[in-house]
Length: 134
Image 1: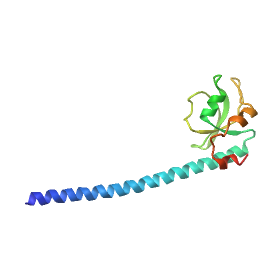
Image 2 (image 1 turned 45 degrees about the vertical axis):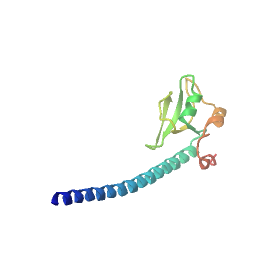
Image 3 (image 1 turned 180 degrees about the vertical axis):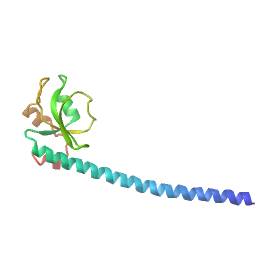
Image 4 (image 1 turned 90 degrees about the vertical axis):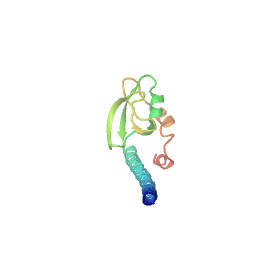
């Protein structure tokens, strides 16, 4: 009889621990989602400020850059929103993560991104509020 009560008590304790873990996991998931949303908003604010301050710059996705640089690559300025700095680099296919937004200023020996191409292609997938700045 003592063994049965001990096993029942152990099962109840395991159920309580599982319930507590489930509640904390759910709350932690919600907190993680809010933190990711805040980080994304911060990146967009930074990118918007850079976008407005760069002459001739336009917002584009990695896929749009690849569509514009099918001849092998192009020298562009990339503003990395995860580390908040800009650099001029040669971008090639699959060099950056899909879905990233890049601030571009196209000039380079392997190809160039003209103003018309940027106006036609860049920023198509950007949020509406990011587009209103231009």
